[in-house]
Length: 432
Ligand SMILES: *Cc1c(COP(=O)(O)O)cnc(C)c1O
Image 1 (spheres, rainbow, N blue to C red):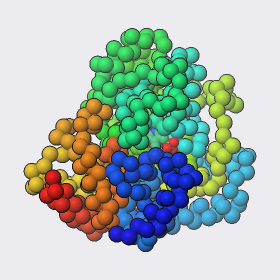
Image 2: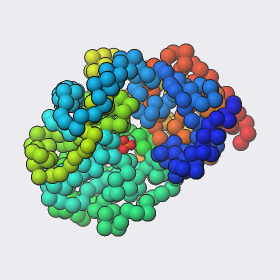
Image 3: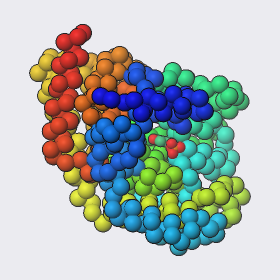
């Protein structure tokens, strides 16, 4: 495979951008090799600067659930651009967006738009602190909630890949208010709550984790969180930046039947544009300025072009819930295909999947939390990633990320993904 243009661009990028990338998860540090620079994408395919094509299994880390350059989304964006990309005043699309979100996600009665998932979670925690008057919050090891200071403690995703447990620059004063509990461990949760009685504002959780690879809540875990929050008067925050509008119209909370007090969104909600949001009951949300005293603002929040893109995607998902069944069928066809190959070879592995998310873990253990995720053989994963890339399948360049299926992936592309997987796994294990 010729990747001369990518190599040259990466060399130029490293001179003027830290590490040559604008987000660490795009680097190939943990899998080896240089990152591929994409030039355009359409439907299920990415096309790089050298003209190679790849079936895309990350879909911009989630947002491109309908595939790339979807015609209706494109048209909505063009329409918005023609009327000026920003006003700095309220606009019609923001109202439509807020109504649509409250319709699709019943626990959300009121919503504030921001510009990224990171902003959404930072703002939700500020709101939880301001509303309850308590400083501490609980997060789970390996869950990623964006790069806000107070979340960069055992943060999964890029931080796990690069081995940055606590980032320099995050003060001890900040991280002391972040209490850590292993995912899926209700016993430990109760201990931590009791040891900090009266000081905790909220529990924040990925209801399905995407950021230590795809990890599912054990039966009863989310229900247990809801119960603990009710018992101890804590707010339950579901970080649905990844799962929102992906696992169902109403996200993980609808699929799994547990209602949070606050929800954060990102990724799909912007249809590929930089958007985030947080929402909940009117009672809580009315504490945000200018309705209430808790300050949170944004020059470009609710930007018309971003709203247009997000609305086009959400309306499509809202109008056609059959999309979710099709996405799940595609995902299961891929994971079953991979499982059959590895079973036949007699190799140990673990696959987690739900809806249109999945991860293949190179470990013999069931992956239920950050400890078990870390048992994976990341060297094997690197070989798998490079092999698939050479076959024209673009995976997330880290063992600790979920893959995201789009509705643009066809049955014949599923077949070619499985054929590539078979070739790559055979090569890999022959060499080992
Ligand atoms: C991606 C992600 C974030 C951060 O969103 P950005 O838009 O990258 O700031 C937060 N939480 C979860 C669960 C995510 O997957």
